[in-house]
Image (cartoon, rainbow, N blue to C red; front, side, top):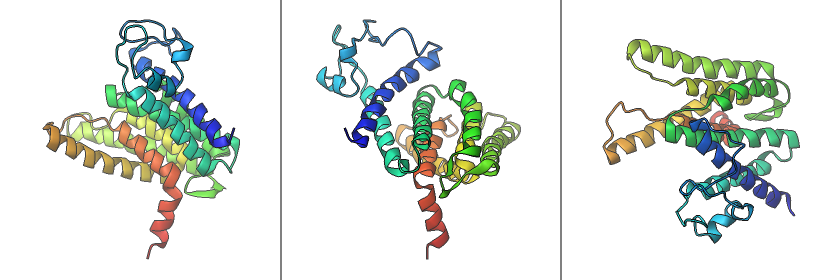
Length: 263
């Protein structure tokens, strides 16, 4: 089995677990037990019907017991996580298995954040609170700078990123509340960016924020124009920040080189 096939299968299997996290964490349910069940009839899903991606295709997206339809999101999340693991192997596999493992965990965390915030407009503390000290500890000691991969990120850049990510978003939230008299930035976004900054450094915070804001502006404006949503309606920012963090991780070095040497 080639490394790429192995990590794709591993990513798809972990993606199946991410679906459990996305569904259960907002409801305060255990992500360990009970085993996966049909949300319509409550029947346990047998192990042979729980093979990532493949089972959905064979069952045509329906429960074997009650024939109720399952969301296309389930195989999509499995495939997305698998594809990101393959991309991480291609980009970082030569660095170190440990570095690759850390980035894979980070990518899976971003997927969970993306869909939970999209559905419920919350970013769970269960991901960000343990993620912040882990990101700072790893970023300060063993992780490379995603913008200068030949060099370690180092404790200065990691702590600066943590402070810049959490601090800047906290400042936006405080100013928004003082000036606009409403919540301009959620606490989950603040903690998420502190985690991103600890792992990707202050340059990662800048590019993540810029990319996320750009995506949010374009997509948010499109939703307002197409669906008629009112100006000032609350739109979750976490999904756009997750996309920005992906860009920083995979293409931060390329974007920096283009910016410095273009023309």
